[in-house]
Length: 144
Image 1 (tube, one colour):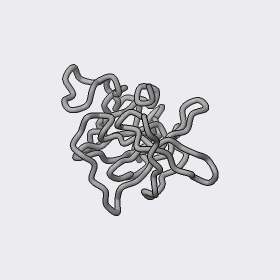
Image 2: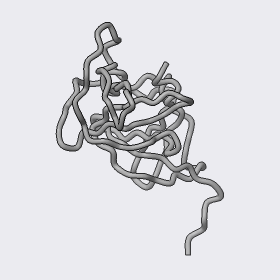
Image 3: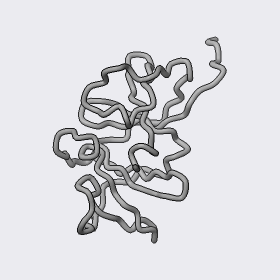
Image 4: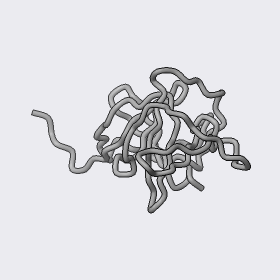
């Protein structure tokens, strides 16, 4: 029988290009299939528009565009993660939402000095889980 870790963080793991990212599960309301997005004139390029989700008008952010990654690729695995911070709800377009994971807090390290393609202002840490490496994101910093 393996030892139980004293504390763990429950996260939603998702894919963007060739990397895995994670958000705390308590900030995620739902994961939806891509639906019609109504464009809103005059918004920044990474805000794709709004959707009407169960009677709530929700802004949609394309995370590829937000992070300056390659152009969006839309297919059957593309998802919108509906997340909330304080009283604000937003949808995040991702390449695929993989699974819910429990990450032991001792497996999360501060971000390295050089991460690469993603600006360090969005990252809270990096989690090593078996052979997987997950980049932990801050919703607060993505929203700003």
